[in-house]
Image (cartoon, rainbow, N blue to C red; front, top):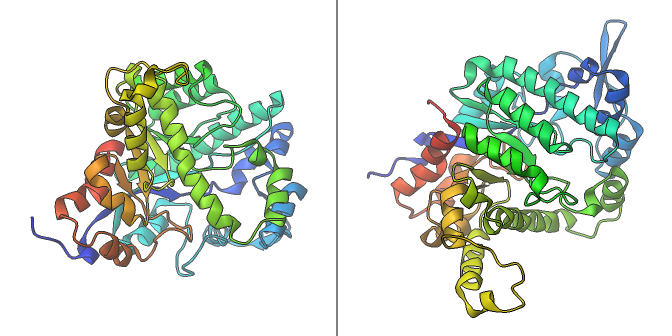
Length: 397
């Protein structure tokens, strides 16, 4: 196959971000809105003007990250969208629009023909009954807005379904409700520290996703350990972080995706639900070959018959076979993951530009890809950057 110039190669991004409009909070009852406002700004209007306001807990976090914290007057919706994304925006000419047209214009500059839309995955971290109700209500409001706004663009956008993960049964209801509107994938954090995904309370969700045939995206987030389970802890870590703390968080956040993937594999869930597709999102893929190697070795070695291998897995095939069949990882810049495809295969690799985050590639994807895919056969590049995503998320572009 003749190699196409990088700048002309169409791309599918399996991870782009859409911050829900803050005015959606006004649709919640005040007692529920109070919970969500701990981590989501709100729009207030008066005297013909609009202001973006922040609750005290959120101000603390923004101060720790050196972001603006006062109530900010905002104009039109595009200006508001830019303001909400300004800590991520590495290209001041990007519109960061809430609407499909503006986002398509931005993505076209990166030669992205279709994109998965990731909204919030880590809203509201405590377990109070009213907080659970708030998360469910907010998920419904966000999902309804996304479904209505992007309903005519489902061929080139895959609007993710915000799942209220404080209540696994509510996740089932919301997954089924929104999948009927053409939304996909289901969105979850990469891990919930006090409710790991191998536990039985989650199984109805895996059964529903398997039956519907809708993939689940487990996006790296702030719920994988007790230290990130409340705003006070997050603020403390941000204020007293070591040099390079964010670099460390990228590494640990990435390899923790392997733990999530192992929950599904070694527990037998992937064997039980053969149509379940798990996408470990924004966790890169450099670790995937090593994970396959280690788990296969332990599974078929003498270790598996020792007392140390307590509660051994009962699988019909090697762990790596389930991973290759039913698991995916997304990456932006990861030459090691590309080199390791002789071990992992190409079916489980998905490219993303992570629009508009600064660790992503937008709007310079062509240049980065020309480097990281140097010497790779065009067929493999096409699968990783286009056809794998098109097949998994049902794009028609």
